[in-house]
Each structure stands twice: as structure tokens, then as C-alpha cells.
Length: 352
Image 1: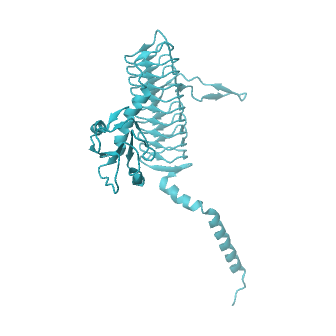
Image 2: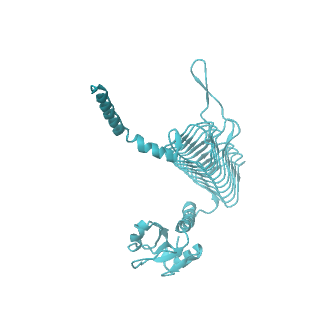
């Protein structure tokens, strides 16, 4: 990407201070940036780097008042984070497409009964099975697998190694990162009299609504019956596991290694920190926020709570409890001392 500071300012609606013809090619951290990079400053702790950075362009808030000379061209915006997100999105789109022209690579295997939308790219060694439908303006990277009768909407990006298995459905503008698996069988077995286990076939599917992002190596299991349902706007980090028949509400976000057991229902706008576990057949109310490594063992009915611990309790209650139980060894010593003092007092002869 090659763009001038003036063009950046126009895109962001920002006020420019410095050289309008400064050329930038890529984003960089303020402390590591070189000439030709653009960087940003939104945390006061990093202000010293504003005076030493070699970045050509620096995004700052409108209120930024430098106390030393700044060599970078400044673009003042109302919200640095939002402006940065917009620029990184454009930069990411350029990187992910990598200049790929809409086409089907001759080394791809696309079944004659598959339907491919206009302006879509399918890379080498990708496989698209019979009955699959891929929408317009999609990018299917090399070695992706699209199974039988899969439906993919428009403007989706499927990265290398992704497996989307038979009859699963993706909405528009979905992004699936490398090696994620959508639609593998759920973990369902029936115990037998001889102690063995008999697999229960899973004949449902997975449905991802619009604007869903699934991280690398995530696994979303197909339903035994019906659909495992991921609502619009959901964002999942790497290594998340969603079991069969789970429903995840709109705009919920999950950090890495979250695990949701079968048939749980996660509300809208829920935030789950890394390694949070949710037991099966539970309901989590809208707006719930769960601290990393917590375990949800019962349904959460009250919305907009912050929870912590295993099993998780109210966040503030957990913090207060933690302040006590981390001092338990010290408190035990004090209790022992008090018991000894009380014992000596009880043993002492009375003075009549």
C-alpha cells in the first residue's frame, strides 16, 4: 500500500499537520516504526516515543499537545483507535487478497455441480464439492475444503486449511482463519451394556450468520439434529471449541481456548475471557462478562453481570474472597495462636 498523508487524512476526516505528500506503506508500532510507516499514539505512556519515532505519519487525538518537536506528520482525529481500525482493515484486505484476481486456479478441484459466484477467487488445491454454492466476491485460499451442499454467502474469506463440512451454511462477510473446522461431528456416544460406547450420528449442521469471524484451529461441531447456531457478528479467537447444538447470540466475543459444552445457549453481547468453560445445557444471559479461566456450572439468568472463578461467582465477590483466601496460611497461624492463648487462659487457676 502506498498512500500520502493527505489521502489518509481525507479517509479519516482528520486534521493534517506537516507534509501532506509524506508517503506511507504499512502500519507499525510507534516505538519500532521506520520511515514510510504510519503509527499511532493513544496511550499517554507512549508519548515519549512520539518525539523519537521515525514514522512518517502519526495518528493522534485532537487534544494531543506536544511538549517537544515531532518530526512525523500528524493526523489529528477524534478517536485514534477507531481510525486505526479503519486503516488496518483496508491494509488487511490488501494483504489477504494479495492482489488476487477473481479466478479459479487450474489446480483447484471444483465439482461441475458446484456454483461459484462472480468475482470470486479459488486458489490452488482448494476443493469445492458437489452442490456447494460459493457467493460473489469471496476468496477461497489454497487447500481449503468446501463440502457437499455447503452454502457460503458473498464477501467471505476462507483461509488455507479450513474445512467446512457437508450442509453447513455461512452468511455474508464471514472470515474463517486457517485450519478451523466447521461441521465435524459432535461428541455424542451412547453407553452400552458391555461398557463400550456407540456413536450417535450427527445429522444436523452448523449455521454461521453474517459478519462472523472464526479463529485459527477453532472447531464448531454440527448438531445432532437441527443446527449449531452462531448468530450475526460473533467473534471467536483461535482454538475455541463449540459443541453440538450450541447457540451463540449476536455480537458475542470469545477469547482463545474457550469451550462451550453441548446445547448451551449463550446470549447476545457476551464476553468470555481465555479458557472459560461453560457446562452443557446452560443459558447465559445477555451482556454477561466472564473473566479468563472461569467455569460456568449453572445458568446465568441476570443480564450484564461480571463473573469470575470456578465455579464462577460475581466478579467483585470473587475479588473480595480472593483477598481473604490468599492470606489463609497467615490467618491460620493467627487462629492457632489465639486458640493457644485461650487454652492457657482456661487452664490457668482461678484467683478467688
